[in-house]
Image (cartoon, rainbow, N blue to C red; front, side, top):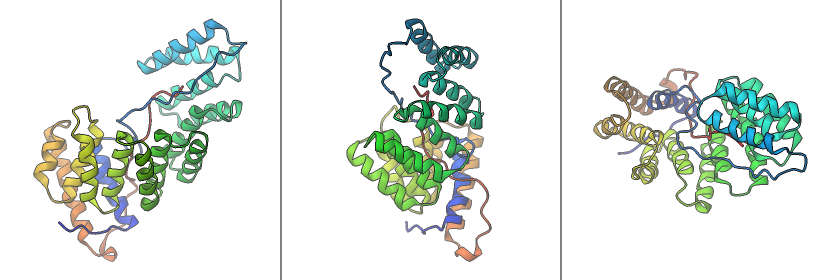
Length: 292
């Protein structure tokens, strides 16, 4: 089936369908495929064993959803050492978790200033910029990360997502393809590439990329929902419905299928005949797990 190339307004319209398909708010689906970003934290001479143990407990508490305990322990670490990168980053993570992105950014910035080579605070700053739709800032920060950790798939996936959301699909796909060449089979990179191709007007190629991810039993729901979007835009409603039904209730499946029909119709219209784009922006995969 021949697909129609979309303009940036068309892409934004399609973002509404993407948001519906993944059942998340704009910029919130930045990950179902998770990847831990682990910075080695050498034992400093002035690092008390008890503080390090409490930081590990705080990390575990945040992972399990106990934000209150995690916050208390991170605050204790920062009180003991105002320049504690782990403590400051941890406080940023707790605030990010509850949706206070502005204050989270303040703590990530303090942590980054305490250690300019620490990658975790930079990832936090990039995530906050993405949430606040400051895509130029996110792109700049992800490039700094890649300068510190060349070929890191997490930083490459983030840069690809930021470029995509800024409207530079060609640039995003170039970054993601190069990263996949060096990190063959990385699911985070593959899902971002598949979604980018789909949203830029090539759902057939997007589906081909996403199929390589979803054929594994442990494939994340995000990958399946993006594949359903690609099939829906190709007009294969049956395949899209079958995929969506694995994760969504019947009513949500029908809602998504109706969105796909609308987007497919919009894609076939001349640009001048298309209505103004809504504020929703297509989502992409980003790392949202705890940053150490």
